[in-house]
Each structure stands twice: as C-alpha cells, then as structure tokens.
Picture 1 (cartoon, helix red, strand yellow):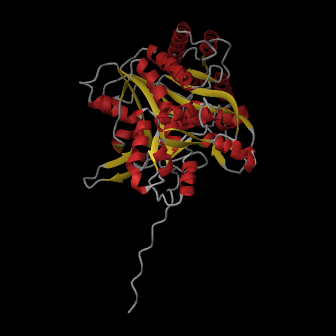
Picture 2: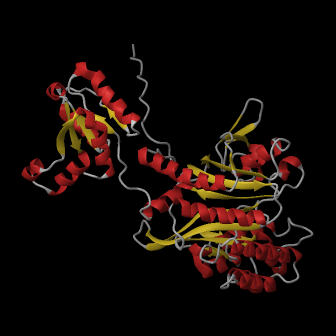
Picture 3: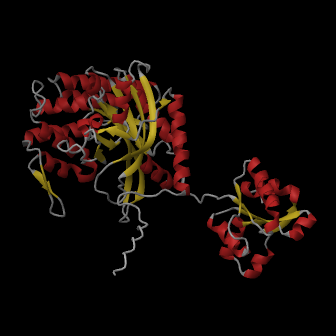
Length: 497
C-alpha cells in the first residue's frame, strides 16, 4: 500500500512585486505622513478613508488597458457577475464618494487620504505592485484658485517634512494649453475629439519622457518612432516636421518668469479658444502663487509638465526634487518627481452626469521617504526599547514594575520574555533590538536597593575602537540607586552622559 504523500510546507516567500515593511520603515513613514497631514489639516482639509476594494466600473476607463476590465488592477468576479478590484489609486474612490454622498458633503469638499494602492503591473527595481499614496483634493471648486492652493500646500508639505527650499520645485502647466497647441498643429479637432486620439496619446507620453529621453528621443516619438538601445521599437505619433516643431516649441516655452512663459505660450496657441483659456488660467495661477509668496524658488510655470493620465482637463503640476543622488549604476542624477496631480473636471461626472470640478495632488510616499533618507532627514539608527533583563525567575513582578515606571515616564521599555537562563542571550537580544539601555538587577543588587545600568550606545562605540582592557575601564555599565532608574535612563537617552 502506497504511503500517502505529505502535504508540502508552504514557502516562506514574499509574493513577486510586493515587500514587507519593518520597524523603521513603518515608523518613519508614519512620522512623515503625520507631518504632511498637519499641513493639510491647517489648510482646512478633512481626512477620508475609503474601502480598499472598488467596483471595476467605478475605477472606469482610466486603467492602462481599457479592453480588459481587470488589466492593470487586481480584480475578481463576484457570483452576481460584478467585477471588483483593489483600488488602483485614491482618486477614483474619491470620485465615487463625492457622487454617492453629494447631498451630505459640503461643497466644495476638501479631503486628504493616505493608504496603500495596488497595481497589477510588471514589477521592477523600486517598482512594486503595492505602494502608498498620499492625496489631497478639492471637489466642487471651478476656480483655478483651488489649483493654486493645492500647489502652495504641496510646497508647504515638502518643507514641513524636511525638503528644504531650493531642493525642490513645483512645476505647473495646463492641459488646455497643450490641447491648444495640438489644435493649432492639426492633431486635435474640437468638433470631433475622438479624431487623432491615438496620436495625441503618443504625444502626451512622449512629452512626459522628456527628462529621460531628451529632445532627440521625444522628437523621434513625435515622428516615425524610436528604437531604444535594446532594439525595442516604439511607434511614433506620425507628426510632420512642422507639427513636431510646434510641439517642441511648446516644451521649450519656459522663460524666466511666469508672465513671460505665458506670453510665449499665448503666441503658440493663438487662434485656439481652448489654448487661450488655458494660458489665462496659468496667468491667474502664477499671480496667485506670487501673491502668497511662492516665487520662482518654489513654483514655476513649466510647459514640459503634461502628466500621463487621460483624465486631466486643466492645470497639471508636479513636485520635482532637484538635489543630486547616486543611482544604482553609481551615476550622479537628480532625484526627480515625488508628487503630481491636476484638475479632473470630468471624473465625478461619470457617476452623476453633471460636471463636477475637481483638482488634487498625489505624493509618492515611498519616493519621498527615500528622498528624506538621501538628505539625511530620516534613516538614522532607530533606538529600540530599554530592556529590563531577568536575573531571577521568582522576581518577575519586580522587573515588570521597573518596566511600568519607565513606560509611565514616556520611555519605551520592555521586560525580556524569552528564556532567561542564559544572560548573554538577553544582552544579544537587546543588541538586536538596538536597545539603548539594559537594566540589570540580581538578588544581590535587590538586597542592596540598587540596579545596574548598561549603556549599550556607549558600549557599542567603545567596542568599535577600544581593546578589552580599555572597555573595562569605561563607565558603560554602572550601579545606581533603584529610585534613580527613570532619571538615569533619561540622561542616557538625552545624551547627557
């Protein structure tokens, strides 16, 4: 008789394209998001948490592949035939909320949201299928004053978390201006918006790749197409040289001031009502930003910003970090974009049938956190809890009392809960926890009313540079009165010893 096969043990592996977040990753992200939330709150925005799951219908046509309902998202079909999916971003859920609760919410409705989103896309270096976003949006405000406010708030948020002025720039453009340029170039027919739609999509994506491909690469995509170093060919928009010249002139229209940039754009879109409206909106935004004190050192009008998503209908903006970092190949490059957004007046209309103006910004949480670490604002060694060691099994109550005193004083602390038989293992545990202090009290110390305080921070420094004899002569461990526990630990944590 054959022996039954054993059920194989599951593999302890993280799914492809996903990652686990430990200690410092979680606490540093929370610290950063708390700083951003404080700015959003100061601007009058309210928090909103939506379900991680939406109907695919609610996510809509703005997924990467519109021919398949689950392309680009993690989706499944319910028994009643409805398709559900993990949210792709935080904007589509907002549109659904704004439509569903439109009679209960104030108008305009100002909200911010922070949380994970999921994209069923091919993972790569630094590109995960689950990542955090941090959004702020105003729904129901047609004035571009709302767009200017979002840009000002984004600037304040970056500075609040540690990105200094001069290390970032908020770049602002208007999709209406680009539409005006394409109308003048003959690739947009206002009477038939679907005409040349594919060509316009290629133009948008080409402009969005200017930083990566350079002018020659973009021009190739505007024309016949481009072959990259690997031999992969990307089809172009098929524009003529004259048409491509107009688009390239649009991207190069940035001048020293917002007013001069708008004047250059006005020349390019002359004759297009849409384009002229877009330039007028940019002029208003530039004036509002300047009035609030957000000059060219913080925000600029930049025609090269187009944003890839198709639902933007007006102003668009990006926050770019301008300081240098080393990439994976050891090359010096600028850090690049960490936030983007714009106006999307047609998104809520999908649910209500009525135009509902909206504008907002989304911050790439992981990228901004990486930037703060690159600048030394975060990423230092995070201290673990003070560890109270266990010398006598029958005195657990005494040790727990020490832990409670420390916690009540606002000091992070824990009692060692493993097997206390090997004291060396307790200190190894404290080291692995990156504990700043180990508290030691055996029966002899208890009888004398004292405890031993081991400064693990100082001990680690001495161990790195001193011989064993020098170690013994240093005060990394000392005896104190039991009643001085909190005060002495506080001194070590504050660096007073």
